[in-house]
Length: 431
Image 1 (cartoon, one colour):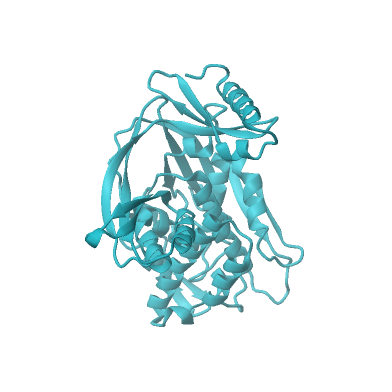
Image 2 (image 1 turned 135 degrees about the vertical axis):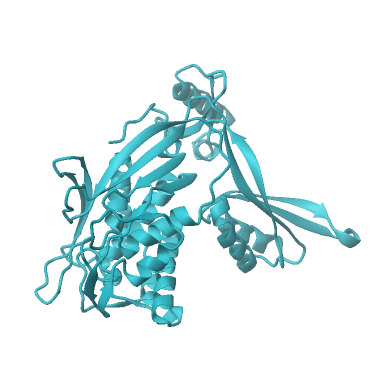
């Protein structure tokens, strides 16, 4: 279970790296439960986010504590009202090629309909983007397996409402923890056959096998569906496409969590464990980031400002800068520079091509050093304060100007609120 190392630390501070250990396997609900067990402070906001999705009447979403006689942790439960016409499958068991918890074997949902649902639901933008990309990975695998175009893909069990909730909940957790790196221990293959919507299929399911390509796997002698399509898509998204950064930063173990599936396995817990690592107090973290830069000379200032605001909101973007420069023939240009997480740079480049008039980007990988930092909120008035720990152990503080700007009164009021918030945030020990 999660144990915070200090009152000013956020989840992001505690999750510089997250390691997944699929002891029993991995499914969407197990991933969500493991992270919720490690970071229970996220549960309230997560439930509020997934409840923005349209739901069947009487449906219930929540977490329950679970013990299997060996380990303790949590399960993530998404329950629809029972339907006598529905054929139900247990989540993460010997199920079909896209067999997910509570799925209706007779139903299917077009990939286009799922995209439309995610766009129309009032989800936070980063959560929506992560969910769309997770579904895109699975849709691409299904299209390859069945030899069809992407727009022809129709999900069966994974198209069920509860599985959509799993994807959105996973997307929320991915955004909330903000881990710089995800790693995963070897994944259990499972095995056997199952009767699914498309007939008798081998395990791992064909789409799951495609998603697991290039990942380390083991055969521990326990069959059945050990990795669901949702679980495989999460691993592909977080681990297989994330380069290992050059990181010499000392780390400490900051939190652990266990997420259970519904199946009982012989001699082993059906659990996904996550272990979070944070940088040691006072140590400057070194990491690699990507830099994209380009110049614009044929897009209006208003339109470019709107485009760059959209780029700033994209997953993986750390900062966007713009500056006036002189180009050939003495023309005034706008130079744009984007700092981003390396694993997101391809999607960010595509967004730049879509939102701006640039015809090309320069890409580079650079290293940077970061001091430990966190954000705390001070009440009366409510002002967020960014804290940074210096190598000497002293803490510097800076109040957020956006919060100060909305306070009634002039500069004197803002200055007093700034001093008060920074003093409270540091306990009077600000450097």
